[in-house]
Image (tube, rainbow, N blue to C red; front, side):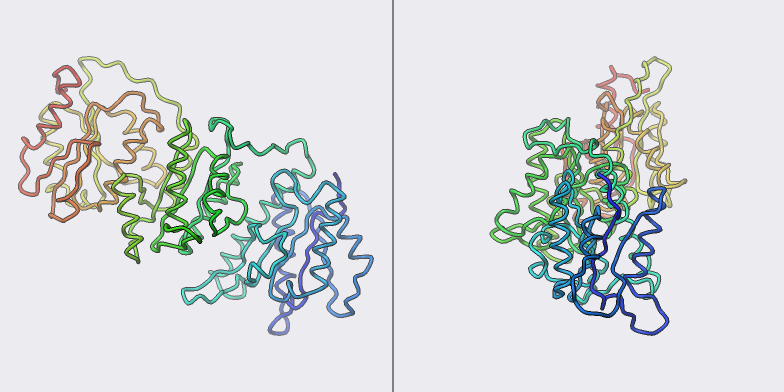
Length: 497
């Protein structure tokens, strides 16, 4: 299909009026920025049409009808005035009618109507046809609940948020136009009973407001890498919530969950929050699938603000599910999960090759190396082992790659828990479980957690079946390592090195 206009921008003219003289209106600046960004992404200048008249009657002219019928996409800029404007709503209805005559309002699984929300509008006040469509919100709510619009005139932070959201919109517009121009590329949505190995979508769970920016960041990068991200419609906060989540999960091979400081909204008829319910459903779904997996993340250093959220986080930590890292580190883990490295051939063991032990510690432990790490390294060295140390120099990607490679290449792992938090320890245990995804093809000969340093209730109560636990809050003694060394010797025929 070919169209004279790539986009028809429908808007209320009051939203383009400036508060002071000598400035461009919000819509005019938006129009220009979108046109430039689309040209950069597509390689040619898109045709964007909007009615630029500022005065006149509300006569719905032939020109408007003509331009709407010749538009590939309708971009509606929602605001309180937009949903009250008879003119704007007629443009909306006219595009639906024209689109129905030229391929339909949907292309594949995507709408040809894009909802840009400049100023907050209650969902019930929006046309019913787009209430369930995920919009592009050019505002954010402050802690007081007051919305603050993204406008480059409002300072550096507002400008950054504005262009991030514009880039999300431009990318999705490019994808839609490509599908309209090449309909043979449209792929059918996977049916619910399709095996997970054939699925390509990713479920990115809805989260609490404090992590919406992080979620948008992840969504943006996944889409730029060619992944389809679900849900792509608003989830119903009603008794149908679980069914809607499962319908989306059934199309996915990976489910990503972000855990914030607050518990979040509880859907009607439920007892758990939206965040906890999605996690429960994803775990249940992935347990039934061969190739599906779940990743759960919380920002490093974040603490719960509510008792229910604190209890939820502790349940995740007890199951060694929670990754507590920086956002960039988590995005690396997502890509490693989606694109695992090709397994390396396991080196043939010989009598000349010493057993390699990867000694994992927190960066803060290295600062007091002589009193913390060195006694362990020396004791293992004296037993004939080769110690692979933790490394923290270099950029984040290099350090993460070194860590993954060490988990693949070593024969045994000892996690030294002193200065790190319990969340840090649980993250390291989770990474041991993920080692096959990094390329490891044989089980570790031994896994141990050496707990030292200042005593705490977390350290005292810690226990796991994932590894041998050694607790030593007093002076270090080489005999403390005997359970770990004995396990290695048992699995390597009695040899230490």
